[in-house]
Image (cartoon, rainbow, N blue to C red):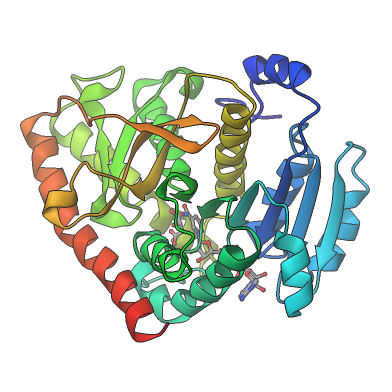
Amino acid sequence: MFAARSAFSTVGRRAFSVSAQQNSKVTVLGAAGGIGQPLSLLLKLNPRVTELALYDIRGGPGVAADISHVNTKSKVTGYNPVPEQLKAALEGAEIVLIPAGVPRKPGMTRDDLFKTNASIVRDLAKAAADYAPDAKLLIISNPVNSTVPITAEVFKSKGVYNPKRLFGVTTLDVVRASKFISEVKTTDPANEEVTVIGGHSGHTIVPLLSQSNHPSIDGATRDALVKRIQFGGDEVVQAKDGAGSATLSMAFAGSRMADSLLRAAQGETGVFEPAFVESPLYKDQDCEFFSSKIELGPEGVKAIHPVGKVNKYEKGLIATALKELAANIKKGQEFVKANP
Ligand code: NAD
Ligand code: LMR
């Protein structure tokens, strides 16, 4: 069922059998949406998830009733949009995924979503800080470059911020990159891994093809491939023609990220995923948050490794990305200061 790198790897299955005693409650805020529904279904199929809490401003209990009939062990509960139910959905969660918010329509940038999604994410982050301060928080809602700093500011204001547990989900960028490079090289995408760094929008998405299996890709082929990886989201937005953005591939990517965190929490070592986290890598260039390949551990972020060797072309891409990223981060931070 799972193409490319399986959502639940063979290594993972073995790891699960020795640590099946663990209780892992996973909460999805925005569970009845385009991403929320398939994401919740994939989480229901994950044997590491023992309890699934599905919350939305509309339709949470319906989606939960439907998914609860899937004959895997986990318990599924739907929650209505009242404060005590949001509290119950969050309490005891090991992982909280947030895909709540509006998606793009053709012609929009992710930053155009800020005016609607900033306050949605701020308010859900407040609830998460109150009721699940120790959970690993996976922010999917766009613009990720700003919604992650918003969440960090909210957690700081409540005195519960731990940068090791806050992740902007950029997994879809590497999923796309491996698929797109395999189309160029006529290879199996499962064997392709492309490091993608930066942020999650247009020019802030920086694929490092020099570190891939095909470092010699150059010229027009390279330019087209980099552009496709940077603007892959637009391809889906245009094809959906007003009906939203990527939902199914995003559900796959979000489920993979959650599974990687659960595997790392259950003691598996050598678990790496890209994620937009508080990072020292480009802090001196006003980018307090940066996406790169992260080593995951029981605590969440175990290590942020250096970006490694990049070529002149990639240095140019990084320089362009950092300017836009710094502005996106600042916008999120200032939003919370002005609208606590
Ligand atoms: P959608 O409109 O289909 O679903 C969003 C859901 O959020 C809806 O069910 C809605 O009721 C719910 N919601 C809105 N406000 C809420 C609140 N305050 N509390 C709880 N639920 C709330 O949208 P979608 O296609 O699922 O996309 C959701 C978000 O994910 C968008 O912002 C989109 O841009 C983003 N996205 C991010 C990535 C990524 O790679 N990080 C990929 C795809 C989409
Ligand atoms: C994506 O990359 O598919 C998402 O960020 C959604 C979008 O707006 O493109």
